[in-house]
Amino acid sequence: MDLASNTILVTGGASGIGLALAERWLLRGSDVIVCGRRAQTLRRAQETHPTLHVRVCDLTVESERRSLVAWATAEFPKLNVLVNNAGIQRRLRIAHDEDEEWEAVHQEIVINLEAPVHLSRLFIPHLLQQQHPAIVNVTSGLSFAPLTSVPIYSATKAGLRSFTLSLRHQLVGTAIQVVEIIPPAVNTDLGGPGLHTFGVAVDEFADAVVERIEKGDLEIAYGSAEQASHASRAELDALFSRMNQSRPSTS
Image (cartoon, rainbow, N blue to C red):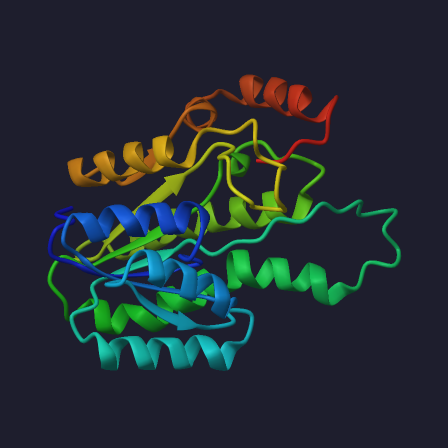
């Protein structure tokens, strides 16, 4: 994929992996739009990168997803790449957190799975009219072996990976490329500040991802996530046991 002449929308693009990718696409000459729920975070990103376009949008709300698509396609008619990056990760003890409100659990499902599925469907008619269109879905190494302390996150990322495979198959014969980015634990604030300091540096990860996108790879895993993506069932069972027998880390 030529990253020098695209118009790219990155959901959850004001921080973390989304912002790191947006920065690299800006440097390569693409027009980049990022959306997110926090206006202050978006403003900080735009202050650092004045050519970055921003849009406040709550992807948990169906009408806001539709408004985002209508706005983006009207304001940026050459938009040709959708990056479904927005995600939240919450720790949950399914059988014990009795006071946990369902709405918080539902929000995690919507952000991580419902929103990218819906946005993909909404954008496809527009993308089919563009040059070099693509849908990029950010899943997780936990798609292959879940971390039980973050059960909803793990399940939704597995679901998004499954959807990505089906979407790619259904779009064979069209111009739309379907790319999956599969991070390992990356040192961002996903799930809360300080929870991923053991992870890969975000710049290291983003550099590797962009290089492989430019090479034309459609499935881009990195580090431990790449190992998991090629593991046998027995190896994944062993990985599951190792991850979940000791500290409740996140990925």
